[in-house]
Length: 213
Image (cartoon, rainbow, N blue to C red):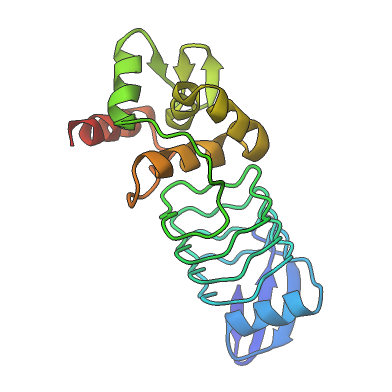
């Protein structure tokens, strides 16, 4: 996103091409104009954008870079968030009913108070202790892939594996990252979802620290 006086450009985060350009006072206003005009914002670069309370119902935001975006109380009913990067996004009070979250990355995100997330998410008591016990009991942690084999998984993969059939169902419906995030959020209410793309060493150190707590 670039801002030249009152001209705001929303750009594709993969190649820098201009997706939408308009006269607006803020990026929020430009996004709302684009969505109300039926413009697809797929793959838009909206990092750190302040979109609090925005009506984005039904918007095509697939593949968007929404890292650090403030989406508190945003209306996102029916929006396409497939493949979005929502790491560190603020989603408290956001309405995600009917959203397509398949393949989205919501690690390092606070999912408390989010409306529309699945109600029947499996809970793993002391999830980090359970994952650490599985790793130390003959398993392995490989953060480069969600699942490498039956005994080798990344952190999200281990959450899915330990959740059993309900975990695998969530993975089939939403993808590995979202499924792992939902299980972590249900198992550690009020605590941010961990970073599922950390290095092996950093992830293991955080699992140990969380398990100790």
